[in-house]
Length: 109
View 1: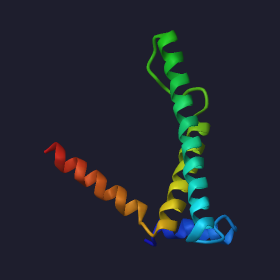
View 2 (view 1 turned 90 degrees about the vertical axis):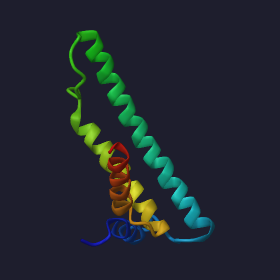
View 3 (view 1 turned 180 degrees about the vertical axis):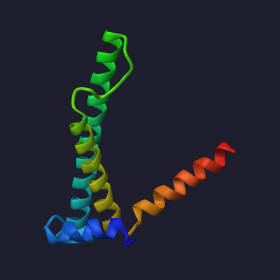
View 4 (view 1 turned 45 degrees about the horizontal axis):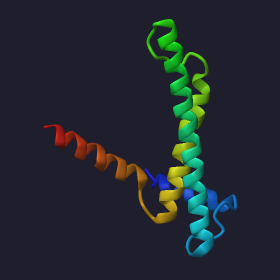
């Protein structure tokens, strides 16, 4: 499987979202992606908080009954921005996550 981070970065370059990989413009583009991912993660937190408040009011389990599509959209957009960012840095995000999961699994043992 091809490196998803590099593919996401290449696609962002094709769409003129990353005119440069390095230098001030490249850093500004990376900052933009960090802020965009943060915005989507904040929206996810808001959706989860809202559903948690609804659940405590109704004494039911937390579920995303209101709008699961919105949660999925924000999760995928945040993930895309992180893939683009790590591709710009030359890091394989998927392998990095796999290593972190394995590290956490080993720490539990």
